Figure 1 (cartoon, rainbow, N blue to C red):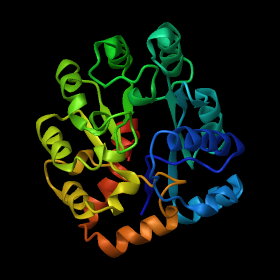
Figure 2 (cartoon, helix red, strand yellow; figure 1 turned 90 degrees about the horizontal axis):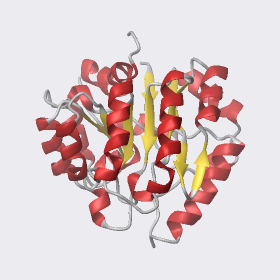
Figure 3 (cartoon, rainbow, N blue to C red; figure 1 turned 180 degrees about the vertical axis):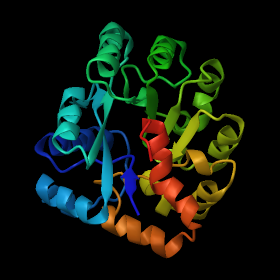
Figure 4 (cartoon, one colour; figure 1 turned 90 degrees about the vertical axis):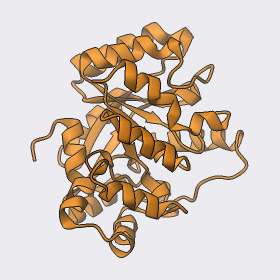
Length: 281
């Protein structure tokens, strides 16, 4: 079965440097960290690509643009061009108030020059941190809506200075005000599963991508979401590499623990991401 991993950082020097910087930044804010796949640090890009080829696996690589650390949109675009059957690129922007004009220029370039399909934005890591429904971000959502870009937001346990930054409820008003804007919640708003489920029931433009948190205490809840007829078309697979247990072990864990109908599994692992990126199946 083909797989599109919606959240994967390949083991390149650029991503390893960024990961180290980001880990130091997060460690300064939170006492407990997520488990990591230690082998990633010693793995080469070539080894990773070989494993992906063996698994018929495509990884979505997102640029990172926050005050603490960056990986450029140009870099992820170059990576996807070099390995067109293994990587899909998503741009990144830092719409902190002092950087908003530059962010809007970058978003325009992501859509029209790099011709990417989505942009990753991390509201809780901006300067200052902002919830997704902060009105200072509305020009960004309007621009992405007009350009036809989906927005990937990091909404999870380590996504900002307070628990409010982990809640999916911060995207509700955005979904109402921009009904055509596709909003993907990376980390699946863990552990606020029931709120996530409620929003996906109400809004067809909200997507859940729980990545490594599917193996947490709410794993049965996410399996319920992936298989439920109201949500099965907007639940997306991701490994969160280098967090978690590695891409092969992650697939094996799903195979052992998730009892999905084959058609549902195909949507979760592959077809839903194809729809989001506009890829013909």
